[in-house]
Image (cartoon, rainbow, N blue to C red; front, side):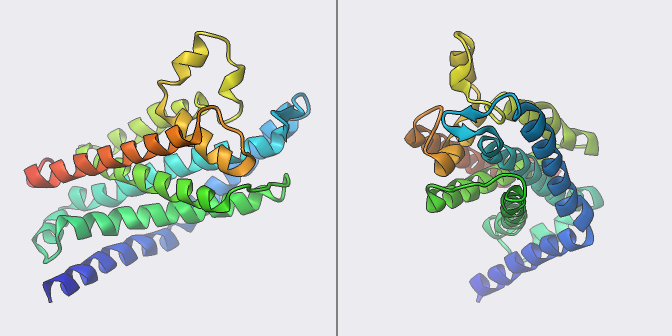
Length: 257
């Protein structure tokens, strides 16, 4: 019976967060799609006219996986961080913690909703890209695998950020000052293989290189690093975020004080 109540609780959290997307449709869906379309117009038209192909792939199509990742990472973090921070801000987090739902169901509800919204947004952007360039997907199953794993990983990161932050301004630090620059430097608009040494080696310390490279491989069969390494790094990041969330709930850090 308790398991059933927990599942109902997780579903209630999930549906509430999904309903919030409907109330903020312009901010949650329309704005990211328009922003990505502008990237296609500016980079695809302006730079694409000077760079025809990269590793045999038309430049306009080459940037599609990177642009999807750019939106996926930032939106996953922002959706999850705001989702859990707001109950802390207004004090309703104590009602959730005292309800008959476990930490797993709480995380499942909030992170599941944030990841779902990001995956839907990624698929919408993928469909939108067809209006600008023809895109082929060499490995659809692997594309969805990387999409789901990345959305889950960075939704967990956003959940951690939402628990850690003690003000709205801190919620913006990681997405704007860390994730976005690392994504641009991780091969969103270019292949890191064209970089001279030692910058080629330096980029390998950027974890987002592995995510973007693996995702691009699922489209075009080309990658800056081996796809196995990309998958391993994604799973490692996911496991690390899970461990940190477990520690937050075990110690009550930022939850009970």
